[in-house]
Length: 126
Image (cartoon, rainbow, N blue to C red; front, side):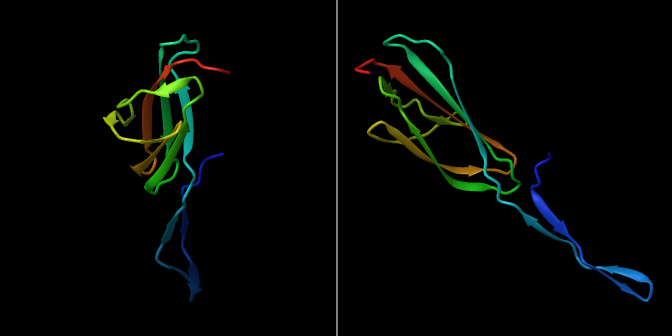
């Protein structure tokens, strides 16, 4: 099934055998973006660096603004400072405990935002 991104509508009347149309109107739908996460290594040892890539895809025509992003760093890993990028541009997330947060300023309609960051495997009690 195709994604419907907008609703177009025209009204009409029949006057003396002729169809008269209104002006067209359009409503752009606000659709939830999709999000996928990948990691560059499926196995790791203590001291290894893992790179996470998160891809957020806007499936709607409208621009998404101020989209909150959250990622919890797994137990046994620590965030690598200054490794956070949005569309390859360095960005500064907030790190509270083991939770990274960042507000993505803008994702254009039908566009993609890619976040990458790294963690170091430090081990610990499981």
